Length: 157
Image (cartoon, rainbow, N blue to C red; front, side):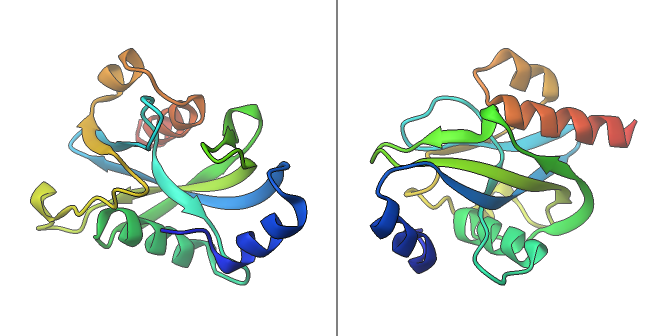
């Protein structure tokens, strides 16, 4: 989806400089595998999510982001934690620099939802796949996504 009017307004004033934004992440697990995604211009696996809008409730933002990027509704479970730091600083292809502080939830697909029902938003994602934690760790991936998956695995233990 295109940038929100809120972020566009800030970008008009600050250009490509670092912008600190709140975000949400959906750690979606099924049968021991995680639904992971790649974004345009990046071969590393990450977790579906995105930025919050002003006055938006975090769980509403989480549901909206998954709906926009995958075309499905999710079952939102337990809050895993809040994440930030250097691994969540991104420079986008247009030169915009963003530092996210994101909240991550353990999530699932509703009963009966199949992979065939996933509709990938190609402006946001280039690929999605179900990966076991072992396979995920063996592939190029984002450190922040690894932290979230490890926290979800610890919660399930």
